[in-house]
Length: 147
Image (cartoon, rainbow, N blue to C red; front, side):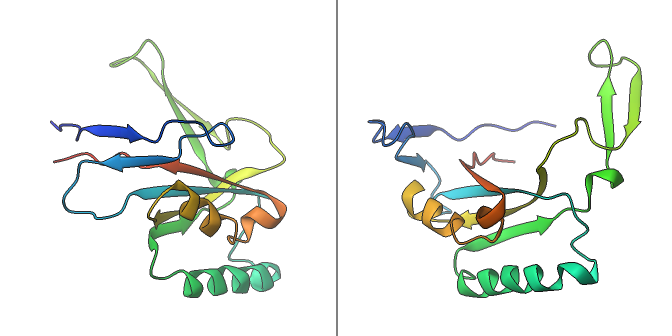
């Protein structure tokens, strides 16, 4: 598999509360940058009936921001995870472990792919994700690869 990285220019690198203000990608296909809003919440089964009220809040968020959301998914609980490691680098022994890598209060439970004019707009949108109200939402610029 081969791919090339599109060039990235960091603009406005004067820190605003310790972050980069804006990231612009040299990509004529997208007029606005994309950001991953990664959610960290209690490690629950989002398909369970007891999560219905909170899932309704996510539905409201999705409807309110449908013009910005380009993708996303909720994840099953970490108990359903399998961790894969390769010892000794490429070609080494594959070691599989059931469950998550580490015990934590909050787990990675999903993500949204958000299109926004700049980081500040992405952060305003992320603040409305229900995960931000009792957990955390990490926002990162997305690097797009060709190929």
